[in-house]
Image (cartoon, rainbow, N blue to C red; front, side, top):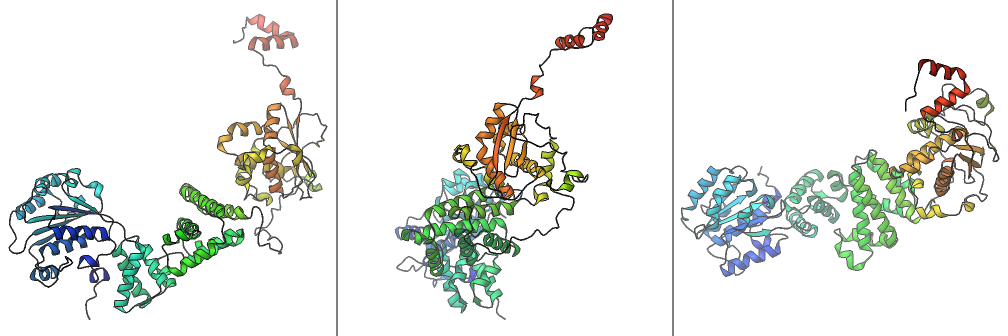
Amino acid sequence: MDNFIVSARKYRPSTFDEIVGQQSIVQTLKNAIRTQQIAQAFLFTGPRGVGKTTTARILAKTINCLNLTPNFEPCNQCDSCMDFNNNTSLNIFELDAASNNSVDNIRSLIDQVRIPPHHGKYKVYIIDEVHMLSQNAFNAFLKTLEEPPDYVKFILATTEKHKVMATILSRCQVYDFKRITIEDIVHQLQHVAQNEGISYEIEALHVIAEKADGAMRDALSIFDQLVTYSGRHLTYQKVAESLYVLSYEDYFKMSEYLLHGQTSDALILLNDIIERGFEGQMFINGLGKHFRNLWLAKDPAAVKLLEVSETVANLYITQAQKCSLQFLAKALNLINQCDANYRMSLNKRLAIEITLINICQIENPFTNSKPNPQPAPTHISEPNAEYVPKSSPSAASAPSSQDPLSLPPQPNLSLSSTGQTPKSSTNIENNATKNGLSHFGLQTANVRKIINQPEEQNSKKIEESQQPLPQGREFSEEELLIVWASFLEALSEKEEVLVYSLKMAKPQKADNHTIVFQVVNGVIKNDILNNQERILDFFRTEFSNPSIKLLTEIIPSSENNIMAYTPLERLNELSKRNPFVKEFVQKFNLQPEL
């Protein structure tokens, strides 16, 4: 059986014209050969797999060729070219700086440089990964690199130009190799596939080219692997499956759901993608790229920037016509924010889901474009048997002692009440935070969204919020306190002063449509009125009750009538109330602490 040669070696360019994607560098080198202005040292830099070492080998072979073609290419037929192709040339030396990085290695190289070539024009030293040389090795190499003999040429190659000493860079002609474009990689893969008799779908080659990230060597290695996997027929589905790439069909389907506000369908598709093993970061990056392509497809002049096959480009153009530029711009901004915050998020899946929900609301705010006539799904878990709404007679007469959120009975309130505001334990807020609203089956998906609504919505008149609205479901006093605690918890950290003020206000239920805040001063009342729209939206959403209204009252508090006494004033007051205190102080000659 013949030895298998990988495509990266089998189809390695042997002439300048076969080099892919580096036309400007190739033209510069050919002009230097034509004018006999060949530098003493070259430095080829750039990413891996873009042709640095290959170009160095072709340059070394060309300047030693005895019969150059009219196009200044090596003939590949003379003795010098044949020796090079057979790896028997005595004039061209390839060194790996990673394993020859010491001063002794460089001294040995300098000793060899003194010996002229036995035949041919030049001795060429190709030093790969030159950035791996040690500091002392670089210093030992400087003099020889600056003033080598006329018959010596150095070609250095590196992927990390910034690690090469500035004194080395200044002694070389530096050529920066760029990443190879997807189009060039696809053309080369087509050439290889045709020569090997392998059938393919053009979309499959595009996926390989994208995965290679501008490196031709990587693309050919992936190509060999996929040919072995697919049995000499490359299809898009097999390539995407093997390379762990999310199909463009999923992105087109997801963008359709987002455009039409089909939130449930979008979340179901996201769940399917995650269950197939794809990471959330990969999905959000791919979705951002997809929306970028849709933006480009909106403008015929920008369609050429799409690095996809013609078939997929037509799909982008078709879908882009359905999207407004405003929708695409807002969607891209939301996706970019999600990507930026993804690493810091504790619940990464929730971060993606919130992004998808927000994108759905761009064109279809708070509506479902695909209404579902079926009844709402029931809770998967059984309802908590210990919880009984306060409106139930059994709850008023015998509250459960095991319920951590149960509260002592509250007095009935009327709008004209002037009694003292009932005191509530701060543990209610803590319990609400720990247990969440799931205890009552309340919806919390839109908490942050309601809290962070634009400030201009808060400037609506209070009278508008008190107009009669449709009837909603009933809620209990306990639910009210827990929802209020969750509202305070959801407020931004930048609103600490507001949170402190609102914690001093406890909402109480006057009836099923009226919530009363009884406060002890005008400052707290103003804070509630200034944020009334936010509070109303929150309560109405959580209780599914659009008819809720808010009332705020200032009531006198007995605590406010208590004066702040100094120690001496406190003693005098006690002495007036109890004569024995005065006698006790005088008898023992006591003095209050000041």
